[in-house]
Image 1 (tube, rainbow, N blue to C red):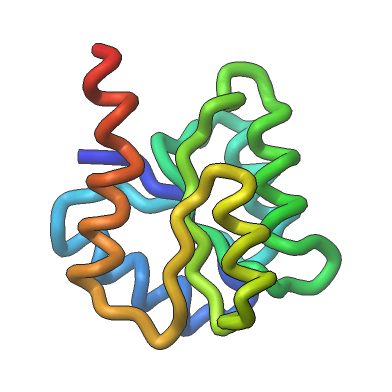
Image 2 (spheres, rainbow, N blue to C red):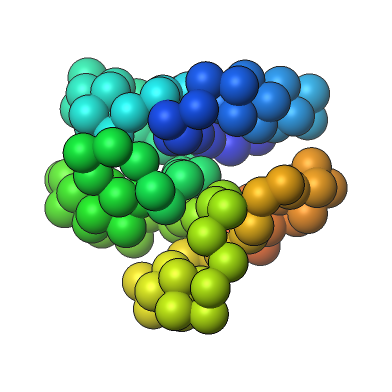
Length: 126
């Protein structure tokens, strides 16, 4: 299964998403801040896909995705934004960077399907 980076400033959200993903066999790197996520990835926690909140203190999920994709070997990192931000401009900003965009509260089956969908092109490349 995939190695999934989950970043949300709400620890409960990280726990819920982690539980759902692990129950389907995914390995999860759970972080509660963008800096923690960057540190985890830099120290060898390269993810196959990132699930990111949009609004977080210090750095938005959009900014974090740009930072992650700037790291060596992660330029094509697939991403899913999981956010309470539902305005059309918020969704458009996520889609503009090539990410899927899901809203909170989320349905676990929809998140798992989104992970499969964003990983499909990478798996086809193998």
